[in-house]
Image (cartoon, rainbow over all chains, first blue to last red; front, side, top):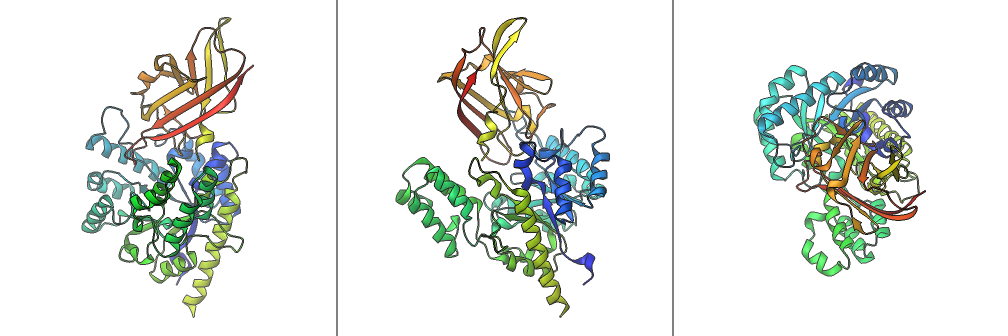
Length: 338
Length: 129
């Protein structure tokens, strides 16, 4: 297999939101960190780190392309949001929503991103009306399949997949988030909620559900609450578990030809260099075996659960995740050459 | 999670105009992970020493732009950027007394991909010097 046909590892700047918000890292500072850790590509949320996105100040694009060159990064994906709730008294009309998506596609294209990530609840009826425009701009529209409200079995995801399969265009596809494959409930989140006062018996119960191969969807929510709920925070914890699914890897199988990008979601890299919940040592060989050639972008979400007063170490965690990906890619490389 | 964003460490002070204290202000970052047009801010609720502040007395500023909460409902051209400190100014002749005050601030944003607005809230004791 030629090098340029192999999977590549990038980072989504979503991982550095805490450093960004407190002014520790600027957008350029994030890109410099990516270069230092050897990332090949960058994904970002326009609305997070680019002022007035998708209509940034003049001069932004020149800076951006200068930084990409300086830090040797491929612009992979712009994670966009269609603000259907822009107004308090109504939702956007279809015409307005189409215009909003086109503006985002134009912005992504000017940044050199060939993918826009669509999020849960994006109206599916705007896809086909934007297809010619996206094709002309060479930007692929890809819905994120994420645990919870945009899980693979959710009606809106299924409707999107129906449109995607029928259109069978390279400009409509999917992004899979690896939080779909939590074999264990993330312990940094469990411990965060323990500090918030969730009952220990409930924490233990949720851990067991995941260890036994289940997840929030296999729990009988009402029964769990009647058994364990002592305070409102217990209910919040049960609700929150819906952000983590424990699916077999094969839910991706049929869709891999449509997968444009992968979110390498992680919560905690252990001292041994593995993710605590997500089985990357199975995921990478699986993707390689099925010929996936796109990016996997490290997405750190453990940052939200660091105890207050203790600094978030996203750069360190992301560089460990990148190192883990590079190690797993190399192992698979050896195997594929045997 | 986003709680630390809701009330800034700095910027809680009385505001003087033409030599007269006309009110007080507090600074806040959006309790979310991206910036949104101001029209998507659904609710701002401020309580000072357990007293609810009247909505009509609140003025919300980002950058050089200032709006009342009612006006903000239609402001789509100005974004409250992620990490950007907005200023909440409350009209109150004489301002707040020197010393400690208990501040509660709640902000909700219609983030578009949840069926309900996302909420950030924080209570903290702050000082007017």
